[in-house]
Length: 108
Image (tube, one colour):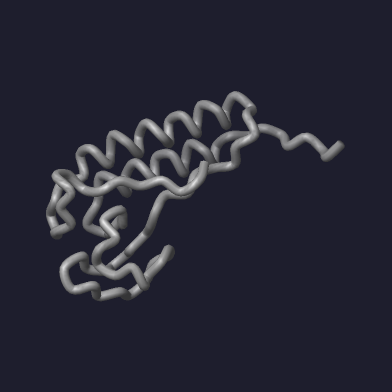
C-alpha cells in the first residue's frame, strides 16, 4: 500500500489535538491491507506518511523521523509520540501482519 496519511481532527496540528478521524482512516486502510494479505493477495504491507517521532508541530524540533523533514511544521499528516491512539493502531496491525504465514511462491 502506497503512502497514506491524514490530518488531526479539525485540521489542527497542535499538541493534544485528537486524532479521531485519522484513527478511523488508519484502521480502515490497515484492516483492508491485513485482510487482503491474509487471503494471499500480493501485498506486503503499508506505508503511512510519516513518522515525526519527537518533533514538535509548533516549533519543529526535529529529532528523528522519516519522510521529508524539509517540509517543516506544515506537514499535518505526521505521527508523533503523543498520538498514542494512532500508534496503538499501527502496533496492532504490525503484529497482525507479522503473524501471517503465507508462503511466497517461487518466481516463474
